[in-house]
Length: 298
Image (cartoon, rainbow, N blue to C red):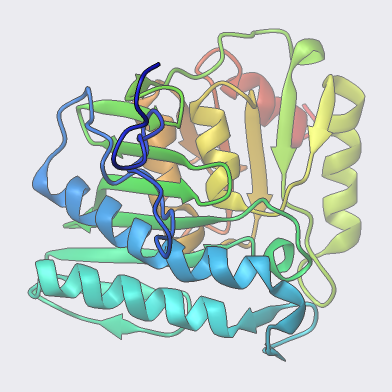
């Protein structure tokens, strides 16, 4: 009879599980695609922030939650995750600027800037819905050049670098290249959106747009995490995504994922999307023009 190993055997993509050790993502997983030093820094920062998020999510009913606006909440988990991200990123790249959802704005050298959402999908998080993400984008001279979106619960790591493609790492697959959907018929398309919540946005105008989308598409999904919506477009899970009133940290990493996966990103009017745009449409190349027509009632 074979003797048991002296130490726990690691599962695929995981470090050995020992007492007192917390799983915090796949930092030991070796990438099959080349990664720059910046991407490595971003991924390590995301894994570090994910540790506390997963602990807090497991005890979500005990979180101290404070309101910062109607139906818009911030938790201690948000703030702690942003602090962890800021410390890790700024230690590695002290000259870079930093813009975070929780109010951190460091100017840096004026050339490169981290743009961070420490907890995209806060309402999901505090209601125990396991659909939220850490989003880190790297902007250089006004252009997104690297992006990481990490979902701690599913352990999916989406990442992209300008000119090098977009990839996803999961517990079961390493560095799988992302490609947007090839569907051309909107009647077969699944689209995602974000619905303006209480006290925000023009609800009647949005409902008119949503009605047009519902009438022309196979289905509409609203999951409440823009970074993951964009990552899912890049992965071909959604054929298109649109939303109004987002902030730079909501989309910084995701727009690069879509572009590097072969998709298009614009505002609802069809103009080139920038971090200052008041709306976003991300679609496969085959469906983008049709999506714009639907949203604009053409």
